Image 1: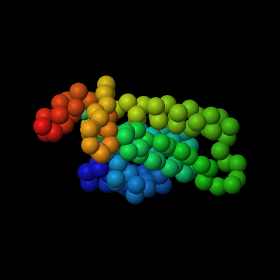
Image 2: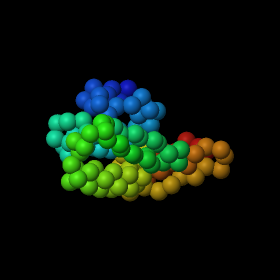
Image 3: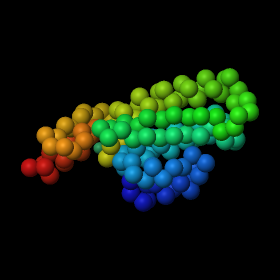
Image 4: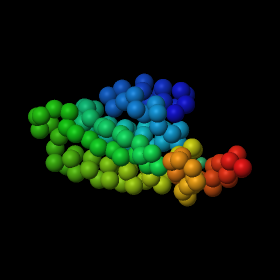
Length: 132
Ligand SMILES: [Zn+2]
């Protein structure tokens, strides 16, 4: 991820930041910010959970959360909201372009050992023309 994309995320959301995010594709930056903002909103100013993000080699991100403390400071309503958020977010992030974050997308599969990429039409064209 470009510096101008990951640095603001780290500054604005230090509680949820992980250095792994730096290695993720540029196109996921807005989605990650959106996730952190939604979690913060549900949490009402507290940090209730830790978020673990794992980018799949072929596109998409697995997101998981766990309560930050053993105490039950997360209400059932918040748990349900976070669960729903995680589910819809993981689905959505697998359907955006890895380069720019736009949709709709299709999957570019390489004939060599490179991982497939999930790309929008424009970046699909750019990849194809630079590959020839
Ligand atoms: Zn794109």
